Image (cartoon, rainbow, N blue to C red; front, side):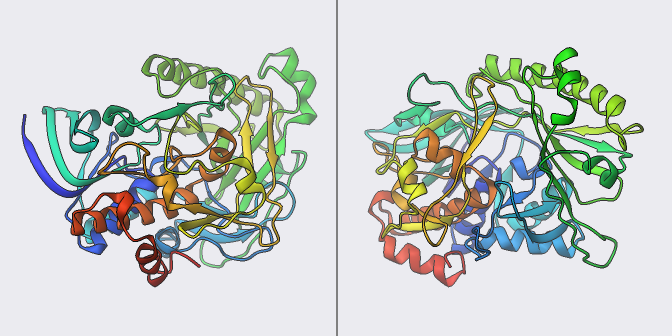
Length: 445
């Protein structure tokens, strides 16, 4: 097997991975980003918008590299900027063009000096004692062993942590079931405003921005009006099914999020495959329903389906601190806080029985994510960022959104670079120094 050495290796090129690799490289580390797809972006390249750069009172709580990505997309007319919402469970929506995410995020990484290895995924790891020394990736060359002074697991499923021997939790505590998954799709030739006006609980945000983008439209509603049809034709198993959608282009829905696949473990290859198949079956039923019954969608056609079903929850590492539900609802602050988040606890029932939220109750409507949640309890030479950090299932349902993941990734990348530079375990770095560096970069507000 070929063997290569780096200061920092980041496994997974989704939003957390982009940010981790970028911040480590900008700190001065020799960085490799390993990504299973042919592009970076992860969920951001699926069509979903960024949510909640702001708290419910309109105060910005997330900036840093997440804001930089949005700004660069905006310059390419591939984002519509931040728009405050009223009502519903969201504080703000930032619509983005998923195809441009692939281009712009890659440009940012290359400009920073990152190496990128596409079509590759971690399939094994080698630890000496409790120290992670090397990983093995699989790709067209077969198996390649890679070493680094520090690694960052941003795989979403905690794959690298699992292979390294780190302890983890899977699904909710009482029965191990994971949140339902969703497969997104894009529709063309839609009379967007006509169609969206029919959905119940429907906050439509209109925001003139000039140029060739005259509005920003986001749908957060239910299909209540068609309950009888939905149940009779078995489109969904229950009434009042949720639908979320939005657009950055005229006459299209850049994403439609209404498919819900329950009872599957996205960290199991066989079950994940079954979920993908079920997701496409649902899309066919949903598409036929929309074009037959929803005015404004008569001529709609599917222009793309996301490259992979959206997995909300699988493994969560056991870290030096486990973020919990009360931490979030009470808006808890930590001395080692490395990111803030203002998103609610948003749970898609693992058994398919709908969806529900719980809101942050603190005066400032946000909470801290402590650095200790990024540090595996047992393994050195490894950090974690994204939806697989150390948290209970309820807390994970809040920290998993993309701006939060990018904020975590930015901190993890700098921490990994510091650990590599000083030849210390990530758990032993000075968190006050890390916070200072994040503040200097505008990542902590």
